[in-house]
Length: 485
Image (tube, rainbow, N blue to C red; front, side, top):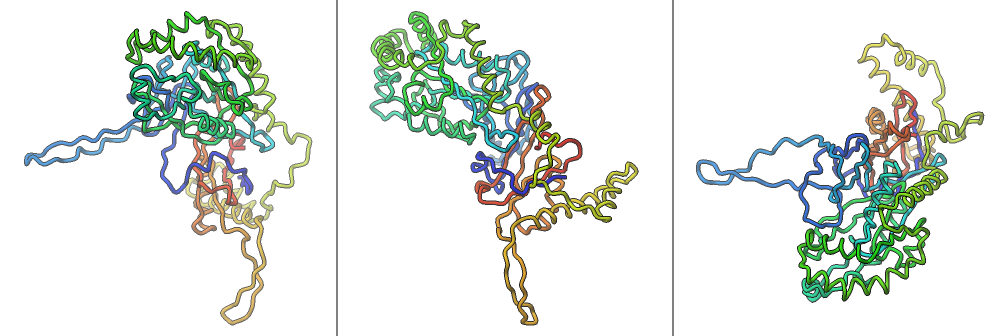
């Protein structure tokens, strides 16, 4: 059993609270996405910026024999939903290819074997309208073979239009390709938070109504963050955040043909309006704002997603960078202390005849189940008592019932939070609650990816202000415990 008293608080934790109920979402990288109460078949308006899937429950009513309205009985909650279609749906936060599932909403922050947060590799993809930027991004993601990636589109950050601008947009007279059409400040803030591994709420833009949806999509940082858009290289601040800059160079005639097909078939525009918008705004904006940024590109990809050679070169470079940044964690952990003394921060419960006796019951194959549980709880209680004794204490003086002064000790910090690593860590929650009155409990679910052998963080629920707490990290290690470490 291991207890970490100074586990580094996750920066993503400030956005979740253990006191608020939250359903645990789990992912199966071999099958699809599983959610405790929502699936991926929810309908969304056409041509929205890709968002994390959500299900909106509908309220139904029925009438009794007297004509009054009665609520229908609450349907049984759907426990799991899996999706196996080998397709790419822009409304889903996943990409499926070659029997693999890639989660494109990211995941909470990643740390190397030294406990230092690893910065993700950020790729910026720029190019003209309908040049194939999103398709190139998906091809890169599919070839990378990394389970965690965040795909962020600049289209999500169009500004909210006023009434006059709405009228212009309906007449195809509003310039959506001008830098002023984007909320650059929000864009920079979201990208910076993703680099830090923090949770962000990204707007969802509807191109049919030229407005933002009322809901947002939740995203995290990841091993790789891909940011794509027509003006990705326009802001100097965003350029500094990009580790690799790619420009998709597609012939103007091809871009026009794609735009005509997309706007007419998917966005309900007419031919005359699309051509008017292209000639008066899209084409001039490309010449003035987009084409000049090609000078910032590290790699120029002609012909877009059909350029397999360019995509493979990009993938090789990204793999090299991920290796250098320490995303391959398990092997480094396994060999980190071979031939070296154990660190001073590792404390072992002193071996006493009582401890040996408890271990004798626990390790005996003939111990009955109820006895195993009883003696395990005793041992867990002793481990936690010993762990709390390692925390800092301060000197205090109190008065006894006999009016005598007593010089004692009191814990220096009253803010202590227990965090259990699911599922074994839950066995220690009752013991920590027994010894720490009103302690707050957080939960983390970590599982090993069977394909890569690397630990992955699947679920996180922590107090918003956990950075101000002393953390007791609980994991009842029965086998290796490598995933939790």
